[in-house]
Amino acid sequence: MRPKIKIVSLGGTISMRSEGAGLNPALGAEALAADLARRTPQVELIRQDLGRVASANLDLALVNRLSGLIAGFAAEGGRGVIVTQGTDTLEETAFLTELLGTPALPVAFTGAMRGASADSPDGPANLADALAFVTSPSAGAEVVVVMNGQVHAARHAQKTDTTALDAFSSRSHAPRGRLHEGRFIALRPPFPPLPSVGPRRGDASPRVWIATIGLDMDETLFTLGEDAGPDGWVIAALGAGHVPEKLAPVLGRLARKAPVVLCSRTGGMVCERTYGYAGAEIDLLSRGLLAGGSLSPAKARVALLALLGDGRGDVARRFAELAARVRDETSPDTRPSPLETASP
Ligand code: SIN
Image (cartoon, rainbow, N blue to C red; front, side):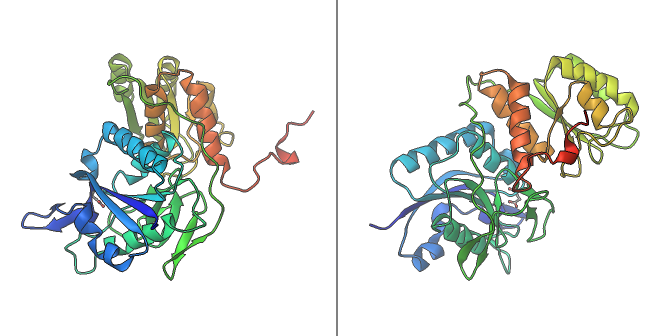
């Protein structure tokens, strides 16, 4: 029997054609994978549309449906799932899918930086690479992002350019692998599963706001936020996790009411014990902010949404554990060296 692979299409540039007023979603899964299905009769490509929208119009309810669909397909004996969608929020949906439960089969998210009507679209190559990944014996039960011949763990993938073909990277981490002559080459083993997040309870979505810090920013946004009372905040701070000194007290007050995660607006890893001045990471963490580790602000936000939404509580502790797990996968062995242990 041929292995069954499901391709789920959500829309995005990979599905878009330019017809008059710029790019708009046009193709469904059937059309997107028609050529690929002809070229790969060894597998059964089951194609399904779950949406035909741009990234900006995807929502959490759809990601929940997607996660249920993946679990159902795995239970039916499916071999792998490919999700095609817009690249603008791909790093969030892929990570959220992983958080909602490590699937029992390989799942590859992919998209395109050029529309389907472009002279040299990258979508077909990305789709073929995603198929090579999910059918590879080296692919585990894991969620990855396949773009431009590279494979990134969903927990690490970030979009770092608006139009470049190599817009995605694993940022502070090593990529999971690459494609070579149509074959997946693993550069490191699959990452271990993350701590589990339960299914979303109820229909109401928690509100988690991202605030990006800029030069000499004042407190107004945060004092207004104290009244508006979101369920959580992500601070996209300067550099290694820094804010103007005058913002530190209000951020500390916010952290006493709701989880406030400290990330870097660079998308890189925040520090926890390097800078000692007021408004730097040591000060902010001592005021109750949570270190985002290597999570980008967008990823930290979906992690908070997932943890707040499952009704299990203990959000701060669970977030800290999750962020530390993702961060410490940077090196193969992250046990503290003797130099890091406090002197007697
Ligand atoms: C979108 O995110 O839907 C547009 C951009 C893209 O797909 O690359």
